[in-house]
Length: 524
Ligand code: C2O
Ligand code: CU
Ligand code: CU
Image (cartoon, rainbow, N blue to C red; front, top):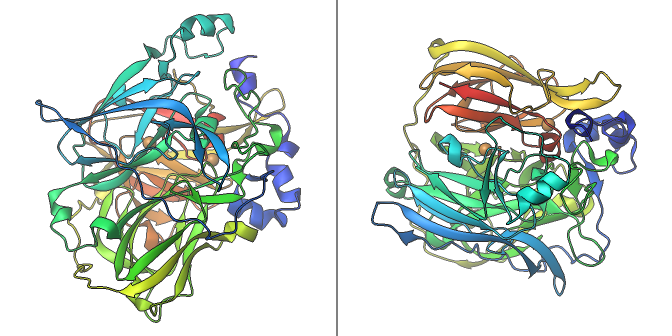
């Protein structure tokens, strides 16, 4: 199959068209909110709120003499219990789903040695990391299983990124993360060319928390009241394994999904830290929730039901790339794939004995539920949300040395098919969409046909306008991913800080990404 052919989808009716027409989504409005096709589980699912929220497993670092922290992980298959009494085969970092939570200190480099014991190549990316290009998880910079090159050749060169910086490392690669950046809730996931979506779906994702002294000095909720919550949806097959509509279930060749799922794969089970609609007992006190949408394509609008006695449900304190200058009160948190929201919820605003449900107001049936908190006891609470949280740099328009526009849309190809493109181009490792200079600020405008969560590697940005007007209240702070909505251009000021080299921007709907909605930018 030629590279061009396999990155396009020929039948529009099987992609966006079927969404609007399927029984699940009533009409176009719903389709544009969900942006994907629902995959239904073929096994009995548990009642929501019947399993406990698993404590996030933290990875253990070994301190190195050179001032770095070293982690060693193995990517491997494992059978884990996600649905009660059911075994699910996952591909996980250390066999865990989701992977362990890594923690690092700003300014202290972290080295992660990744050993790939899976039958396919992988590429680990630290999302939100300010990382040199050789450790950034470029899609063709692969850690391959032993003997893969031979296999590759046999299969007729299906990985079509020949000369353009393609790197193959056998078995083990050391990723070096300088963490010369602010405290933030980052995450990591697989980034293999053409196969990111199925490999993340199988389990290659996890959180990476960066702390710094400025944040640690604040009286924010900490310890057990600092909760990383990785939210993602999945569907299950009759045998308990994850269901996913890959064209090749071996993930070798060809890449891609069945036509009906070209708009994105949406599951019918919402998992938090790997558990279906879990429940957690909490004190009547403030909690910091580090929310990550790690779903392939599903967008959520998170709210609490019932709402608090008074005040807003959420106090947003941080965005993708760290603390906001000042807290923002929100009744709901819209969160697109790849985005993080750092919020504080004060459970003393509900009577002891209450159940407080984290709901997804964009969901349907059981996907309206995310998890439930039970406020079980009064407790001392000396935490606070200070009126001033941080002093992040604020960019201004006049710093922008260039203006560029990137259009994320479906494009008709010469042979009658359609492709997900940026400025009309399908991803090609050899093509550069923008050349920028290290240290500079540019104003970028993203425009889209349907929902596309737009993400940049390396460079963080600030949203300065939406649809020509002011940004939403939840758009504040430094971000690396922004939900670009239909016909609502988003303007951002991007700062190219960090390292020179080749980086990518892409849609974080992972099915769109695999279908080449990705491009290079060069930092010089
Ligand atoms: Cu979440 Cu290219 O990344
Ligand atoms: Cu990223
Ligand atoms: Cu997209």
